[in-house]
Amino acid sequence: MDNALMRFVGRDAGSSRVSGYLYWAVAHSLCISVPLSLLLVLLRDPVMHFFAMPSLAEVLLGIGFAIPFYTLAFLLAGFFKGINKPATGALLENGSIPLVTGFLLVSVGYVFPDQGQKLVYLGWAYSVAAVIVALQGALQAGLWLREHRAVSGVTQLDVSQKGEFRVASQAFFIMGLAAFMQSALSVMIAGKFLGSEELGLFKSAQQIAISVGFVLMVINAIFPPRFAALYHQGKMDSLGRLARNGALLGIVLAAPFLLICLLLPEWVLSLLGEGFEPAALLLQIIALAQLVNVATGSVGFLLTMTGNERYMRNIALFCSSVGLLGFFMLTPWLGALGAALALAFVLVAQNLAAMCFVWLKLGIWTLPGPNWLALLGVRGPENR
Image (cartoon, rainbow, N blue to C red; front, side, top):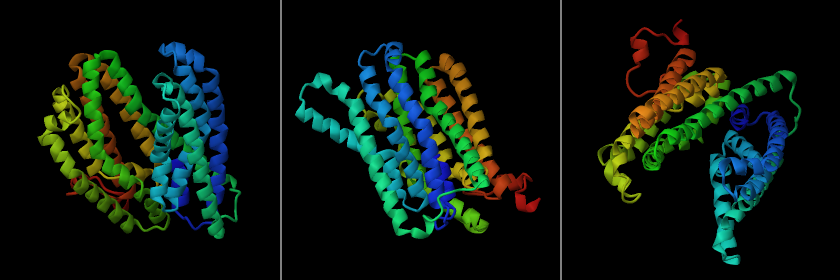
């Protein structure tokens, strides 16, 4: 629900309905996360036996208790992005919990120097970190609402507003599931067909290439609420200009590292240690796919922040499904190279498809250079 909250809050952060969206999202997310938390706690022993990891149950106990607080922190991240506080949102979403967890583990290491017990502390350190970060985020949100009384007056949403928010949340959930298919399931499938050495080469190339797309992650922490606001205000020219500027900025910022990955892949991989140089071709393939990801801009958020999330949902599901099929077919045949090609296909196909739908539905062309869809006679909505 975090992205749905970012959209509905971001389109008019001064609306009296802002607190209503926040309270409704928090209540419904807790209704889902608390049962999941209890389920994980109760099933931690079967999960431990399934993965044959003797200490996993103790780790899952702490992680299970952390789920509601982690969910709250993630939800508040979307809220803060919507009210134009992207730094706070980014910390709540990705940065604060790992940092606090690391600090707690280091502290425990000094208090209890027995190295063999550190895995036991991991789950509880994560749980305590999630509680601290979630409460800190809730306090910040409460203070902001108190300072902006105009947006905290209406806490109840009408039926149509709840329905619209629910539909958007469901679409975002499916898109999150598709992203999980791309990241976690793809690695699991690759691990089934690859040896440990080949899997390590593939993962190292994938993680380094993600750095090319990191620029887009930064842009996506800032621009989406502005997309929602401009679309809500009917300023389509400003929306198109912002989207193109964002894509151009992403290319400029990502270009140096991309060139290094393409021209000196062995040197980049050597920074990880000896034996990673054979992943040079894999790094080049995935880096090129990440270039398409950056060059097309925030096309996914352009669709989702303008009420066209169902198209992005369908694109993500279709491309992820075809990509997983590619992992099943190409990995046994080509090894790590096949896994890299399947991953590259998902990134390229999903972003190009989303870019085409942005043109068809919004009449916005984000890719720097000529509009080849218009040259082919494919018209945007204003020319139909």
